[in-house]
Length: 492
Image (cartoon, rainbow, N blue to C red; front, side):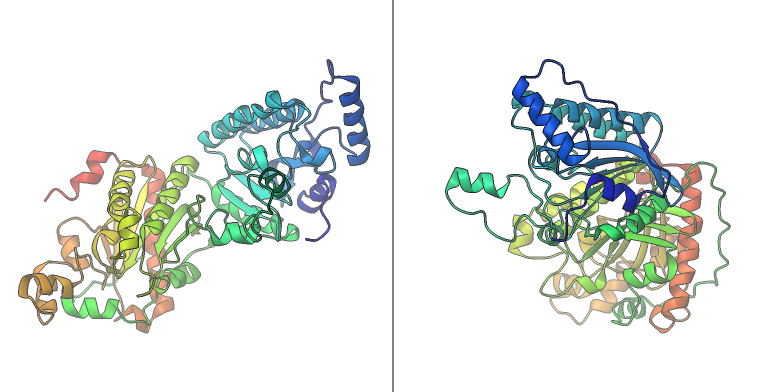
């Protein structure tokens, strides 16, 4: 760990020079015992702050942001009633003034000198943060060393985007308390920023000097205009020829075909990658991000063909990660964009034990009822329920060689013909092509490949990006479709 930054250090590092305005008023110290009052006075002298939390506002790269900062030198950043009152007041003010909120806690948890009356203040803090988020306002969290106890279990764990300081101790029960209670040390390497990132609990590990950049990039997307956005004209597209079904299937499987990562690289104007479910799971087969295509913002969920291997096919964790993205879109009042490109969900004991079928069902239900505009891109392979789980949307775009099938064509051949030799015939008979789905109204726009995305990856991704920008701008104007509208496209 590098030297711990004070709250003043962090203000100087993050807030544009000369723009900091404190929101704090002197805490009420009436009714305290003489001993506790003396302890608080000594803490204030040591910390240079009058409480364990400092709140206020300032500009971050010219953008007005509300900020709450922990101060560890004040009784280990512990939260008593006065500190909780300050946090609640800051959150409520940020909500009332329509400001994004950056929280940078550092704390050992509840102040033991105040006990349960301090402990239950975490309910008020959580309620205030939930109200802020319900208003569609961004809540960003930077976990510092250490963040534990009731702080980690309330305002430290509710961020839309949550990152942590490198090497920070981050967890629920402090290791010193654990050892005292159980007579043995807590296992090493568990309560660290890096482990939480690996487990999909936080989105990134970020050095203090890089906080401004990630906050600025996130807010560029999260605060992008929703209202008054003009519809971007549709790009001119070449006619799509009558592609042979099996040719489309084989081309979609080309390892050189651009996937979701190259799509983001060549087509998106801004990207902030997120990580995992926030609840201890992550799957390399799915990318979750905040993104903009042109000026149009979205929450982005993309199946990553390179992250799905024979050893690690897309599992139920990926679908739980997708459902986090759906909640983010609803919270932030952003369009949700999904990308289908998968060889299929895992067929394994672990997947069954993880509730794969139930996660597919919940994804379908969440998507079709989501109170945010939705856009789906069929980019390549679309095998089985793992693909279908991300299909329901207000608008559906498909690449020329994309397709959707209940099973790989080889699997369908094995069921019907008891061999693999009829895979091409089965694909044709099952009407899996993007063109077939467009004829039935499932797909709205088919993007041509000239002649194949693998041969023109950058141009293809840019072409798709133009369509996505147009569709997202339309959705920002039109808003979310109803359940009936979303379901109707499958009633043929």
